[in-house]
Image (cartoon, rainbow, N blue to C red; front, side, top):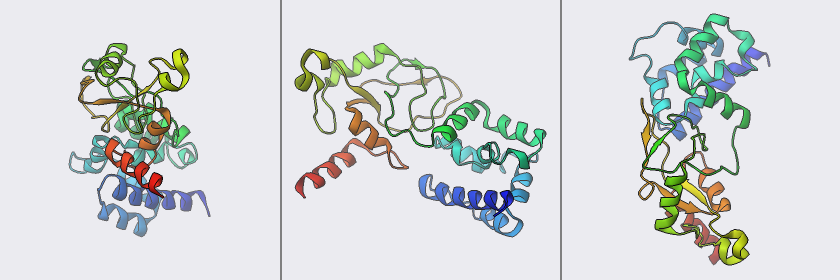
Length: 228
């Protein structure tokens, strides 16, 4: 296949992934890709657009999935040669403050072991995440979470302190219970309502599906496995 064919396949794949992960079905976009091909459709979408025409990108940004946008696909290294500098600049401008996060996601695709997610009812360094933590960590928020819930895993109950003694004292990941909201300002996080301590293994499993698992959902999976 040619590079243009690869772009068409990638755009159709993104359409399917968007429908599954975000619940957004862009039928007219899909039909245009099939009719015109991915390159022509992408170039059309990079022309000036009204607020209504931007609705698809806005839905993806609100769902913390800018990586599924046509704009993100256009800026992938393998497809950049198909577009002019002006088109690439337009794509990056639309992604705005998310451009860095999209690039990181494209480089990593999926980080199997996400590091500690942002804690706090304290301002966190705004809009810096696709799937894993890119926020500045707030030690006060982390401490408040641990003070309230302790350091045992909220999913499996594992305690590093019990297993490893002093070496494991106060070691635990901190997990954000919901996909991070996209806001125009700083995000206020409540360490008691929004965070839970989890072990690294459970933390990775919570983030492994396309849609973040809840603590309860992962507990049920674990229980089913233990009963087999």
